[in-house]
Length: 213
Image 1 (spheres, helix red, strand yellow):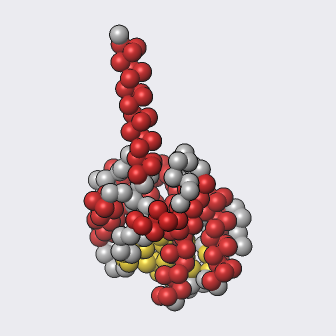
Image 2 (tube, rainbow, N blue to C red; image 1 turned 135 degrees about the horizontal axis):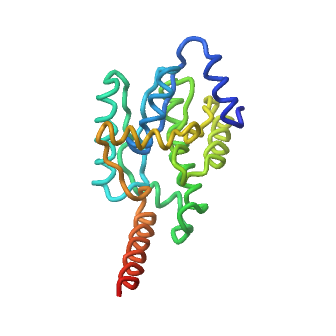
Image 3 (cartoon, one colour; image 1 turned 90 degrees about the horizontal axis):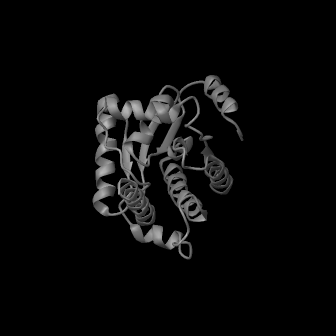
């Protein structure tokens, strides 16, 4: 079990051969840096399983962008997509709908998506599984890794430590998004984060209007 990024980098350098890895992808921008990093060491398969995303049009748009990015960097990388089922997300976070972004509601969302990834990795016979989620400065890598290692123990599938914001990973993802003309959404994905973002925009607009008057 790795518990820091230094150990993770040493582990990558120590790998012999190319193990298989199922990489959960939340969107193309967040996946960009992570894919380019991990494809140097693993035979990766991308897994798009994001029942939290709303509406369905947004879910499909992010999947299309992920395919678009994959096709530009290496069209041989497989992509597996889980059918859209927002009821899974609503069931997973039941009772925590009113929580703020970054709260335990998000923990439950990470858990849902990582479990789907772990089970798919086991089904496909992959050596490892992990997620791109930790590249975001708004995501708590401590929670993500805690969940990942718990799933490793429960289902006996190796979890790969995840903290891809390190070494300017997030900044690199922004550069790559511009380079490859990737769609960058302005909210995490769920209807609750979308509502918070809209309220924040409305508040800022109102404050600016008050300053102008």
